[in-house]
Length: 119
Image 1 (cartoon, rainbow, N blue to C red):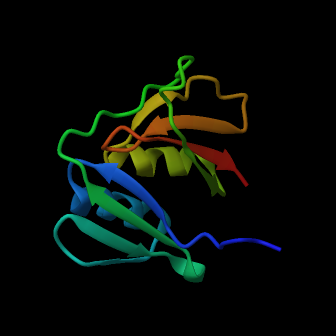
Image 2 (spheres, rainbow, N blue to C red; image 1 turned 45 degrees about the vertical axis):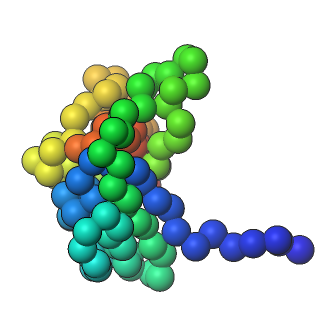
Image 3 (cartoon, rainbow, N blue to C red; image 1 turned 60 degrees about the vertical axis):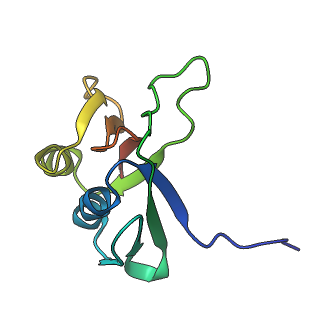
């Protein structure tokens, strides 16, 4: 029996409103609230939140010393189309050169790593 259920994934960042808008464009959903805590209600009932952290230091990827912290895997229909979209929204490639793999690694505008994964 589980002791808890996952409620929300929260990302620290310097600008919660901007990062919430980035993920709303990538994943869909509705941005709620203003200020230091922004909620993103995603399709299917999932949630993400973004918390102001003025001294935020983006994770390093790859982080052999454990500095990566965590990353998001996002399933997409077409890697090339999704890549164009996230780059236009402000993501930057971290490890997207190998076109033979079924995934590509990027950083969101606050520096958190995420992968676009072929569905």
